[in-house]
Image 1: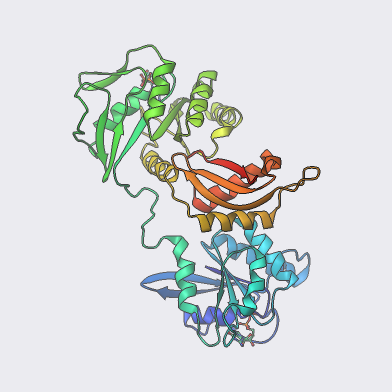
Image 2: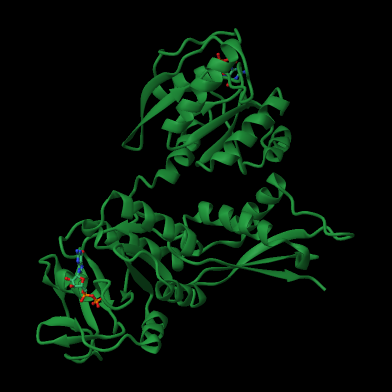
Length: 433
Ligand code: GDP
Ligand code: GDP
């Protein structure tokens, strides 16, 4: 956790509170805490590290202030969460705005804390801090030890210390998984490796017959169903691609899956057919994980080419995690599971209306949509219109004039806030008549 703010707002005092130490020098001189200070703290059984920083002027270009800005940026880079301290008595300064702009662009969890708030009527003087666009303002008094507990509750929350939102933690129910890809990319090889793994336990799912290509299995507490993938047939105990590649079957598999693992052949790069399959996945709004197989069989030069072809031809899937694997050599396969579960969770993410609306308004404040002739689109509020894929419906006026670039900007903000990795996200605009 990094403490950031202009000089004299009480960072060092707060540092002492949080670390219950006297390590940082508290003094009424601006800029005394020049270097970074590290301290340990503990809250509800969780240990954390606090980094105190000198005063921060993001745009400082010379001398001691430049050095302080550098130190602060390093502290911020190291931290999982940034605590931005402002002076409840001094009000919002231009410098606070600069710092807020800097922090918003980082996209790290950030907590806005108004210090020296002892004896201030809650809220009254704090309203102006909302204009910093960082959401809720938390009043504290470092000197008097008020509000410190809620500060820590809030600051440690995004870190999921309770582990309740671990990326690869099991979700209830069965995740339907389709392994898609052109003939010969290695689908059967991968599936057979999986099914031969000890960690993978087959179970019976009502309604599935023994020879249907629907294999229910459980892995580390998570249930999956491997659904019929185009061209794959069971031959005794193993799977083989015995049919001709069928577009219709691929489509059906994609449609009935929750998550699609799209395999690309590293020795071939991204072909037209790969791009088509990827297109189907996006059109169907399916969660997706990319895996480039046969990574063992390509040299450095080819690797660069493959990476580039993915960027140029599959750029529209850049919300998805990508893994470089070798099914045959069983390399890089473990991390696939976490990505599959993460994509599933993202596709089924629930987003509250207040949270969406707050994010929307903060985004507009950060960068408002362009005026189109006489019209200036006015974005008012947002709510979730569906799941799998998540749909965000934005309400307002003149929204038909919102540019695609602006929609992409909003998409980026929503994705970041809700950690939407691996799922398409749809944004719909509803203009009031
Ligand atoms: P820094 O430059 O941001 O590290 O600020 P300091 O921690 O050195 O504090 C600057 C001044 O503000 C010192 O005189 C502190 O005593 C005072 N101060 C710190 N916290 C509080 C507080 O909660 N209430 C009041 N009234 N003063 C405080
Ligand atoms: P499918 O048609 O997508 O099911 O592909 P297969 O699993 O039948 O694999 C096609 C060919 O690629 C086979 O000869 C496999 O041995 C080979 N293959 C699969 N995975 C890998 C890999 O990771 N590395 C290499 N070098 N070859 C692989």
